[in-house]
Length: 90
Image (cartoon, rainbow, N blue to C red; front, top):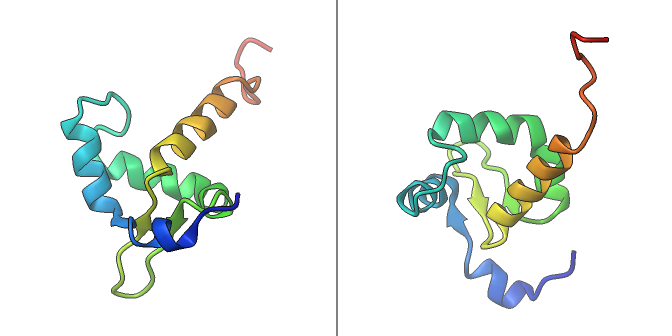
């Protein structure tokens, strides 16, 4: 994705702040910070590829763009539409 980096980089926020705003808005996904961290561990490559997250390293916090939430929902919807690989009813 191509972004206007001049505007996007100035709008980066720490992941923990994004989560606080997400919960305060009444969202039903990622109710805990731990659930968000798990999701990121499972989908880190996709989030970086979509250019919505800069992973933290060392003492630096993970930063996300204003489009981070949209990317999470796209990933969740894509996975929801895929057939389950380990279905017990096979």
